[in-house]
Image 1 (cartoon, rainbow, N blue to C red):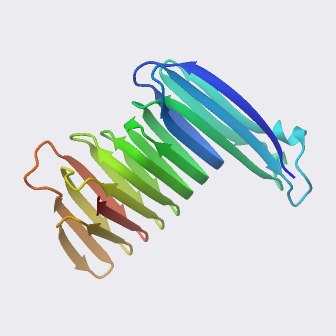
Image 2: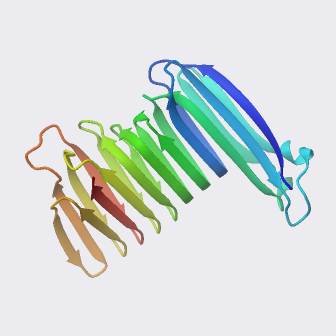
Image 3: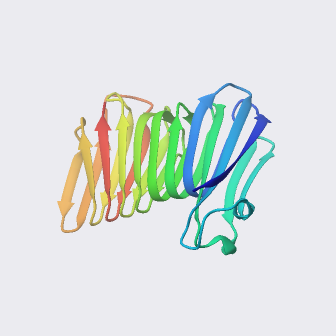
Length: 237
């Protein structure tokens, strides 16, 4: 049986707020909402574990700090060592303006982002990140250890975006008319491209991909791709 507790936070924000999230285990959901305000709902759960069932006292050992400093909203989770043996998750649901800067670090769990625009940095250790109808601003990045990122959206004009994966998977679905130069390298992993013609070089334990997605387009950005033992797919839609 699970013991749970929900907390809500409401903030007044400007035209382009920033969210910084450092999360351990659970689900993080970010949705584009109304301008000028941000809403955060945090649900802590402690389930039956090897050493017995979860109790209200265990919830006090799960710390979620939600603060605002000017245009920055910071969300960080931490567990006391004494809660070991329990199954603990923290789910965070956020509604914020569509134009937002996101910096998200997730140890394990799921990340779901929909409808946002702006610089987006996702660092994923293990788990799954799904981004839909998202426009990536300049300086956006994906850094994946053993998880999976599924991205569907677009690049802002002139945006430089990087994606690197260790042993996981990154799938980037972009409009076919995307204007961007691609520079990609893979060690034991792979980079696949569907819907565009790029220059590819293959050698033992080595692959390089380069070229413009649409050579005749102007004002394009740049995609930097690197795969160690994982895979990156670049797909036109």
